Image (cartoon, rainbow, N blue to C red; front, side, top):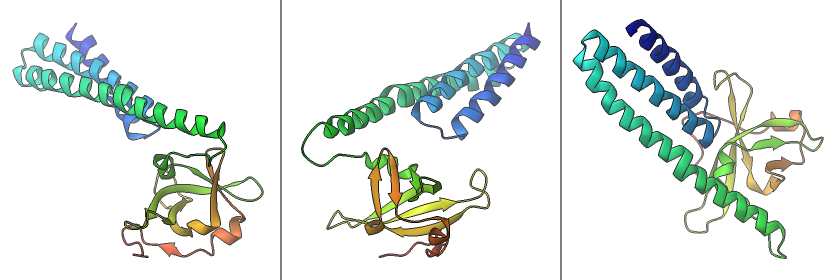
Length: 188
């Protein structure tokens, strides 16, 4: 029985780590913590069946931490994202300006004039006093962050439409934008 519990624990821990590390949104992260909870319960059982009190106590604590993660990502954060999505949807029906959640700027696609994806937004810089958007940081290329380059896109060249940031550019225009060091961006 202890072998079965340890294999369930191992599989659940690996699957959950992949789910949470992939950063595919609050719901996937929340379900990752749910799988982590299954893993920590299985590790608890393994520790109890094999007489390992340190493993038992570690996984009692880990179970509570994982349940907090479930609440945080499937409860609170999912509701925040739902609230933002509903506000954006409602704004489309009004005569005022359509709204877009600022949090989406950390993962929005950058779409060129021909409809092709040119990169992904990773952040946005805003003026503290004015509240105006200054520029976006765009990631291009690479795999899972390895080998990607960052470029600065002035906000005046962008607009948001259909959940993506759109620009009147093609790929060769984007590669002409200033490249940024990943840890040293301009202050203006």
